[in-house]
Image (cartoon, rainbow, N blue to C red; front, side):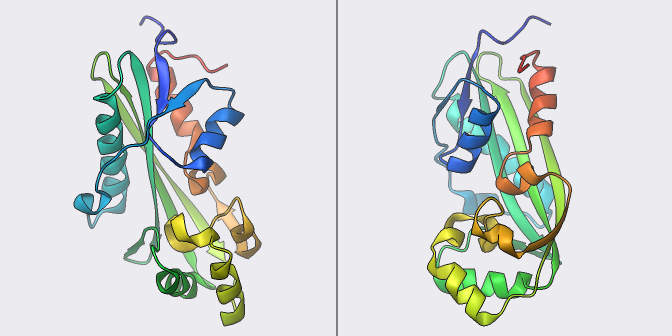
Length: 196
């Protein structure tokens, strides 16, 4: 297969965390945030949901760029049978943190790479088990007041102050942050795109 390194990389996300991860991998890329209504893509199967959302984000941006490999991702938190997305409000953030307090949960991230030149797409996901410590109501209030939880799935940021609450993680730290780099590497390798 011919190398696709001549194609530019485009990150289909406005997430500063995903941007930082790609920068840390020394990748050259541009950012074109995907504009889709995520509420249209719900599913009772969380893996299907994150994979479908990452595909839809990649497709939305691929239609806007030429000669690019479009990278898209979506992250959710799963507690029992409940899918926890971004809280959207302080009361919702408080409720999510109360639910996650002293609980094991799963963070699932889907990642897709779409070649806008050929339409070829590859998708994968990562599931990471996380154990949060027991939080007091005061700790929840103080954390929510920082604003950090508001745009994070499950209402916490493992790469920020939310790390204070995490007792154990089994799986990919980067997946919890929002971009499973090992899965991304495997996909880019399928496209014969060299990172190293």
